[in-house]
Image (cartoon, rainbow, N blue to C red; front, side, top):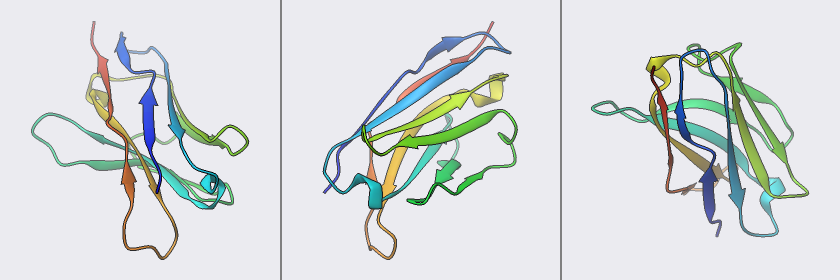
Length: 117
């Protein structure tokens, strides 16, 4: 079982930057594929960025070139570096962990990101 705790959200002006962090419990973190998702008010949760246990990454088209996902297996951390933020990036951002082939995955409690002037 994995517990995830996100941090780093907040209020930022358009064009600004934020670094989100997700701290994971457990000794098998390096085996998990990790992801960042977001949910805006009135909308469904959507994938933002994914990173495999091997470090391969994938991004939603809406964030390509602006967001970067990375992981530090020694510290059980996953990051989402966000630059050039837009008002439409406003959402609650969630961290996700899943073992390949497993039937369930794990979610953090979310961190609010608000992009507004």
